[in-house]
Length: 170
Image (cartoon, rainbow, N blue to C red; front, side, top):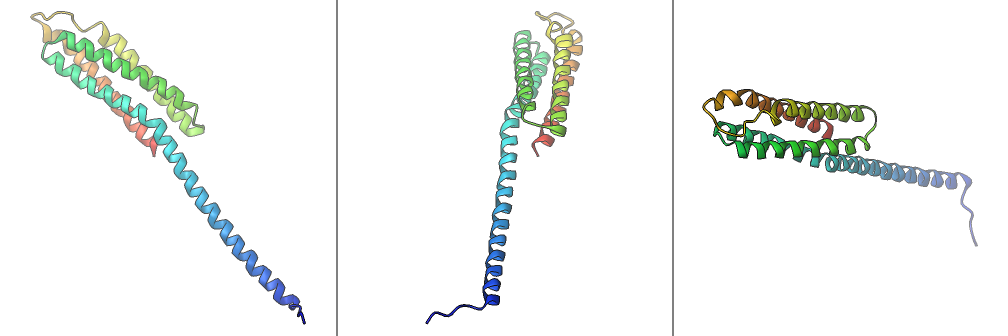
């Protein structure tokens, strides 16, 4: 003989099952949201890391150029200047690509970084490229003092750019 469950018992069991399903779905959604946030952070890190590497190389080549200026090595100075100009140009291109991936405040921050890189590039064109003497003369240190100051300014601005990239990365 088959017994029918009471109507109240069936609805209580269904309510418990619905509650368990709701808790399960909420847990899955929470885990999915955390995983998605982790993916977004990883994607940002992957997009920002080549730019950070370029900026670090700019800073290193600036230090190298200053050292070579103090050692009166014009050939090595020109090489270091061309290297940090090249890496700065790569950072500029990568920032432009990065801007496509962001919206709102992050996009504005990247636009400000692009403007900073453009100002650094103008500074290099005006105060460094044509100002490094080709030959060593008696007034070498007096001749290269403004160039050293301009390179130090580029290095400082590159440090500011690196800090802005760190803020964007978080």
